[in-house]
Length: 330
Image (tube, one colour):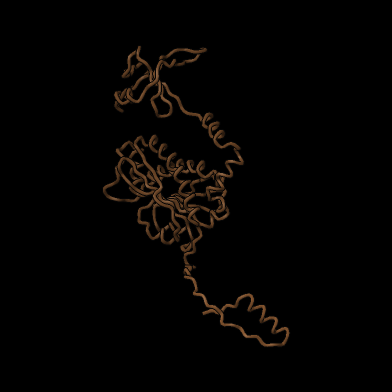
């Protein structure tokens, strides 16, 4: 064991040496060595728990906005939630990939470098099926994606990336851009195998079909902004930028633009009937001439109204509110 001297013993020893005399040093009190935790240099911990938690919060906001977009775009209920955020070595992630895959390389300025987005193949097939008018089911037999299917996926993913801008604004003003999509795992080695990354896994459900939506963020890409990955920085930034946070939030909500539509009526026709339409043809709706129109705010039915004219433009006059009971009965 290591021997340690008290401060008084050290002072006495120095006086003895300076005066040429002798000194008797008592036996040093030994102390047990505290438990030492081994450090793995092959897998250094570069992301703290606070930083991983911050990434979960960022992608939790991303899930809420993206689920609303996909629900409307695919016309089917879509749910997303953050399953986990953890630190992994890139080769561990790459070893889990099977063909065919949907692997998107994304430029992430102002970050210097790219991140990787990986979508489950089953979910990719379901999205393509919904876009082309199908029920949104996975294929019974897995196959490679065709060129047309890859183009459709690129369009969906490119639109998806735009919903990353707002959740990341507390860290940086990002401008994600889709570089390319790979469907073969052999092209997944775009990051050094031993590079430390943050893996954020999202669970996605489309009409009962479940899969994963993974975001791989290399440490070297996000390193210049690591000090901003904490909730304290976000709160202080909000206070300094907006002064009164509650007042600023209320002001922003009041200025938020929402779509408002007045629905005259609805109907269903076949593709054959649609192809045969010409000038002068009449399409019968499910509403009567003297019936109230339905006014929607976003995707919600909110008001009943009557059509009219205001200052030379078409308009509607709200006659009543639509409550939840009326919606459930209708």
